[in-house]
Image (cartoon, rainbow, N blue to C red; front, side, top):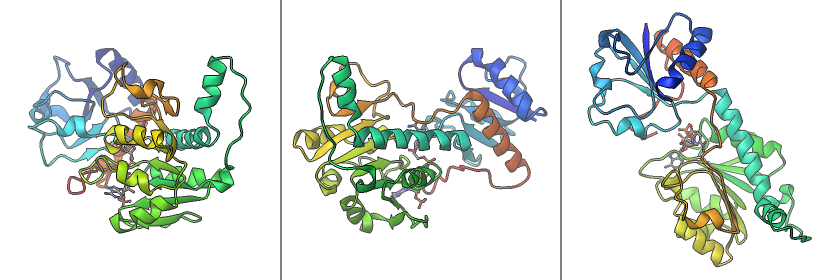
Amino acid sequence: MTLVVKSGGPAALAEWQAHFAECAPRLDVRGWDDPDLDPEDVRHALVWDPDPGRLVGFPNLRLIISSGAGVDHILRDPYLPPHVPIVRMGGMATVAHMADFVRLGAFALLRDMRRIMANQQNRHWEEFGVPRSSAETRVGVMGLGTLGLPAAVALRDCGFPTIGWSRRRRTIPGVRCYEGPEEFAEFLARTDILVNLLPQTDATRNIIDATSLALLPPGAAVLNAGRGSHLVIEDLIAAIGAGHISGAFLDVFPVEPLPPDHPVWTHPRIVVSTHIAAIPSRRDRARFAASAIAAFERGETPPNLYDPAQGY
Ligand SMILES: NC(=O)c1ccc[n+]([C@@H]2O[C@H](COP(=O)([O-])OP(=O)(O)OC[C@H]3O[C@@H](n4cnc5c(N)ncnc54)[C@H](OP(=O)(O)O)[C@@H]3O)[C@@H](O)[C@H]2O)c1
């Protein structure tokens, strides 16, 4: 069975092959531009940003696996074979990294890490208190899927009173769950730190805008680790300027890399990280891809299957 790989460029191929040799020794792992590749042999593809029109050239392709969490880099191919299922990258390493990141972000916002770092950089000695402890800070997680649900559990276990919001109501012990647009305002009104882990869809684009920010309690903060398209940054900056929002921790942006002259780089109330919340290693990604292929070949539904009807 042949797996064609386009991720990390030709230099990464040997590394992919070594990792797959460990976890799926029977897979024949080939490079995207391998001149000896017979397109008829390709049954699976692990890709990032595949050249439009190439995937349809593998007539026996059965499964496409995105090498990253998003799938828009695959969907933009106008010739994408519509019958081939797409799996989004995932696995326990991604889940664990994201849970660590939201814990980091929630505590950084709670204790004003941005100010601590600025004081160190400026050699400025300042004694300042914080308005509340973790036990008094309500965290609201938007999106309770593969990453959001374990993130909510991790935050709950850190002592933050945690609530969650998703399309359909989830049941999580110790985490009050809200569902759908009709309960969104109530969810926001009970959220001191808003953690976004929604997928990018038409319904979630610009969901954190002036209207939703205004529904958060005064002094609330925002942690965006979902997609840049979820947040209207200008509205966030305005809400911080107005004193309604206390700060933000942003890992994802509408344009990446974030342009050097973007105001958030130097904003005194915004922590910027560079889309590093949950990056699994190539070894972890190979393991996840191998397990998805194995599940598919056993006739099971692979994990993290993209649902075109839902858009995530
Ligand atoms: N920053 C990083 O390094 C990084 C790394 C990996 C992933 N990500 C991002 O993390 C996000 C979450 O990924 P995931 O794998 O956890 O996604 P997922 O498993 O598809 O979960 C999506 C969650 O969002 C909910 N949802 C979807 N549309 C909704 C809507 N219109 N209203 C309310 N809830 C809605 C779903 O509700 P249901 O439960 O009802 O289906 C589900 O709970 C994605 O945006 C991904 O790109 C970021």
